[in-house]
Structure formats: structure tokens, C-alpha cells
Image (cartoon, rainbow, N blue to C red):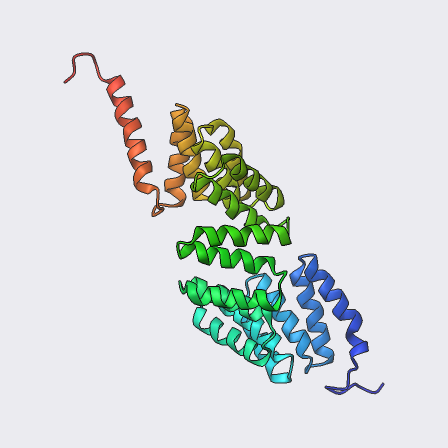
Length: 312
């Protein structure tokens, strides 16, 4: 049998393996996809696309160092440089290294000035660094290159809100919903702005309900619960907090909100239970002082009831 040398593998020889790996990634089976990419690379050590895709799979399971090594190899063997720099920038961003992320996303758009994703991702990097003007500029460029880019409108709206321009933020989120009626983040943001600005409680609830129907993550569920509770309906809010805890049993915002809801209804047994859970999982959380005051109030109230009559 004659062996196949490195670089002699034809694209059609590994095409079925690529199809299998991509299918596995789409199914969320990233570890299995990585194994298939390794099989491709055993046949062809110079396959830049395999290194790049395996890097993406490593990113999806938070193995960022392995992802970075794969992207480095992809660049060495000549994969599409704009694509790889964009993906490597994403890995640096997920690691919290915004400066390296910006550098890579900048390289991506320098190589390919029409790379809307590169501008979008660099905009997110600037946003994380608190530079909202540069973030808005990059999101705007991404929209110019890809007019139907719903997520770019969502992110630009968030940057406008941070700059204190809620009208521009709402306009961007409304446009995002027009482009993609199933964008959960746009509905979530519109719901919160409608509520916090006092514009429309019914629209706030409508958007937030749509958001959690599309993607019921813990924070969105808590957001809907908070709008209901702060509108005077803690009983209706509680199931949303409980759904958030079902997804993340130690989610501090849900525990704090359940404490508040039960306290408002006068059920201090349940209120104290959730307050104690909050203090256990988030001893340095933002609501710690208020929850400790609440528990101290309940303790003092119990002691006053138990004190013998006439006790000073």
C-alpha cells in the first residue's frame, strides 16, 4: 500500500469528514466534532480549515488555550487569515483579554474591509472596555456592510443606552425586531426600557414575555418577574423567579427577587429561606446588606414576640 504524503490529500477525500464534523457542531456535540477534525488532521497536517474549525469547537466548550493554539496553526498553514483572526479575537475576548481581541479583530478588517463580523466583534470589544463611541462606530460600519444585521442593531442600541441616549437605543431595538422578530435580546431590552421609562407597562410585559418564550435564560426570566413584582403583582412574578432557579439553582438575582416577593406578601418564612440561600451563594453580592437587614428585622421581631410580658 502506498502512503499519502502530507499535502497530497485532495479536498474531496476529507469532504465527508468535514460534513460530519460540522453537523456534530450544529448539534452541540463539540467533543465529537473535535475528534473528527483530529481525524482530518491525521490525514492532512496542513489543513487550515480543520485547525480553524477545531478551534471554534474548543471555544464552544470553553477550552480557550486549545482554541488559540489551533488558530495559531491555522494561520501558519495558510487558512483564510481574516476568518482566523476574527475567530482568534473572539477567543481572546472570551478569555477577558480585550486588547488582544481588538488587535485581532482589527487585523481581520484590515485584511478584509468587508468583514461585517470583524467590525461587529470589535464593537463588542470596545463596549466591554467602556468606549461606547468607538463601539457605536464599529456597529454602524457592520450595519453598513450588512444592512439586515439584527444583532448589530441590538448591540449599538445598548451602547447608545450607556451613553444616555435611550431614544436612539429604542429605535435600534425596534429595527432589530423588524429585521428579526425572534431576537430575544431586542425584545428583552425593549421591555425593560418601556417599563423603566414609564412608557407602557403592557408593551413592557409583552416584549419580556416574548423574550423568555424565545430564550428563557435566568436573567430574562428575572427581568419579567421584576416588572410584574414592581407593578404590584409579586404572586404572578414568583413562577418566573422559580423558573430562573430551575435553570441556575444559585442565581443570586432570582434568590434576591424571591426574598422581596415573599416579604411583600408577608410570607417571611419563605422570604428568610431565600435570603439565607442568597447569602450562602453570594456573600459579597450587591444585595447582601439589604438581606442582612431583613433577616435582622425578622430576628428582632421574633425576639420581641418571645420576650416575657413586662420585660424592658
